[in-house]
Amino acid sequence: MRVVLLGPPGAGKGTQAQIIAGRFGVPAISTGDIFRANVSGQTELGQQAKTYMDAGDLVPDEITVAMVKDRLAEPDAKAGFLLDGFPRTIAQAEQLRESLTELGHQLDCVLELVVDEDELVRRLSGRRMLVDGEMVQRDDDKPETVRHRLQVYREQTAPLSGFYETEGLLARIDAIGEVDEVTARALAACGAPEPGQPAAG
Image (cartoon, rainbow, N blue to C red; front, side, top):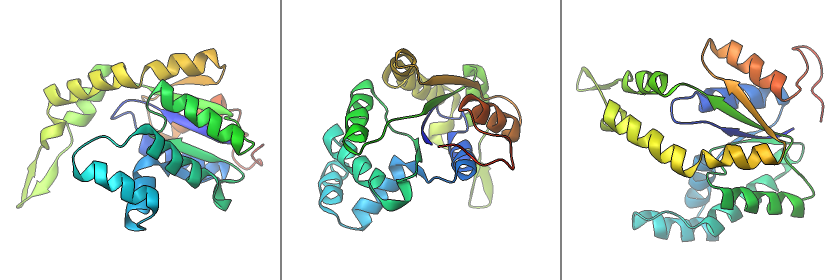
C-alpha cells in the first residue's frame, strides 16, 4: 500500500500516520525524519540541504525530492509506505509521480484529513508546554498565528487535493472524533480489510 497523507496543522496527521502505517505494515515516512537522517548522516544531499537551512532558506524541491526518492528506494519501503508531509505542492506531487514511475510503483491512495478551521484553531491554541514550572503557550500556537499558518497551508498545499482528485486517488476523511474512529474511516477509504484480516497490496 502506497499512501500520501494530507491535512492542515492540527488535523492529527502524525498520530494517524503511525497507526495507519502500522496497520498496513509499511513505514510511516515524514520529510522531517528524512531531512534529519540526511543531515546527521552527512550525506551529499544532507550537506546541500544544510547549506540552505543554515541560511534560513527553503530547501529547493530538487534536493527534497531526491531525498524522498532515495528513502522510498530503501528495502523497508519496497512493499509500500505512508508519506506524511510530502508532497506540499503540485510541482512536488508531479516529481513524486515521476520518481515512483522510475521505481516501478504508483500511489494507491491519498487521504486528506478534513477538520473545520475553528476546531483546528481550538486544538492548536489550546496546546501548552512546561517552562520554568509554568504551563505557557508557544508563540506559534497563538490563535492569530494559527490562522496565518492555516492560510499558508490553504494557499500552498490545499491545491494538492484538487490535483489528486483529478487523478482519482483522493479520499477526504472527517478527522473529528476519537482517534480510532478517524483511523477506521481512513482505512475504509483506502479499501483496508477489517482488523484481523490480511492487508491487500
